[in-house]
Image (cartoon, rainbow, N blue to C red; front, side, top):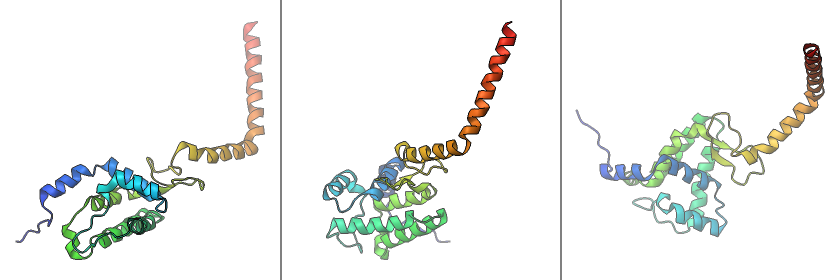
Length: 195
């Protein structure tokens, strides 16, 4: 019986796993997804912070000549995966992104931090969301709970205010009448009990 061996040296893989912690991978994903690749200053800040997480040139991958173009292409691929409406669709799209990143076969022997981030993205595909506030400046986020539709409390406020206004319009008069009747009963009851 033959056993398949990983083409990556174990210490290299272990080093990558230690370096690409889940919280850091998620931070990279959220910031990368929301990065304005046209803004040179934003790109510079992003690269300074996540230089080691960007796809590394290597055998078969070629050198990156224009970083902004490369970032735009990588981001477009991830946007396509993130925008899938179902988790399974996101996972399949992410597998395509990983496959493209590891093509040609020589590149498969060069696992970089970006590959590890993409593999982590597979594990959080069910939490990938796009903020429902259409004015959000950073709409791509990883939800903390399944029902989460907004990236933050400030983005949720307009929808909450709209919901409250609709509820008040539909149920406000009835609620006030019930509240007044309850208060009147309490007042009557306290007067009877006090005498």
